[in-house]
Length: 275
Image (tube, rainbow, N blue to C red):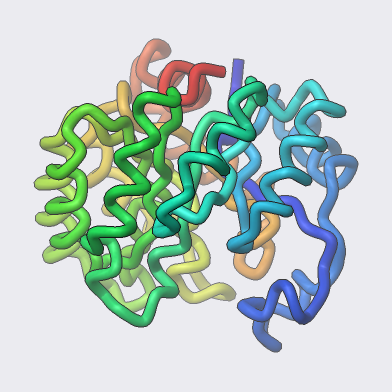
């Protein structure tokens, strides 16, 4: 079974998706299950994990509704108001939703680079483990040191790092990121998505050769057992077609054993998210 562990759906509106800039004009339309199903069928992907794209309980409810309607949506990473003292009530209202597997907050967009260490936010995160929910970590490279401290506050909470922490691939910067990634990977409760990389490079000129050192670094740090494929569709479309990213990861992973490839293409996501 091959799983795309990271993609989004939305009905576009400028108000709700203000992060979609003029240079991302291609994303200013609806992206719905029928669009993605055509892509995954062409690429040989069997199922997907749908991830929140805006900070809204309504969007979480919408994603869960889509997941109930479409079997290929195996799991949902929703949003919940983790810094709210009443977040437990919100989480409990979704307790019957079997496909809600994780929650995520867009930490990368917070003006405070140390938001992830805030007491209110951490109190909310501490309520996830008992409810069987993972937390997806969305950060930039600059947030890695404080993210390590954050993970250490929750040693029994399962985490998934999105987009390999968005290193500065376009600048060719790797050493500081690689060191921090290795330190984060020492925490066995953290898995990592091979996703969102092409958009951190030059959208028009990136190459597979440019991606390999970063892919090699997360492989060395996390090992295949804690790595999972993700497309970041449709955001990836500003830099790559769906099939091209699948081929990029396939070409890189072909040197691995069949068992190692199976982990990256689906087994890790199925195990970590409980799909």
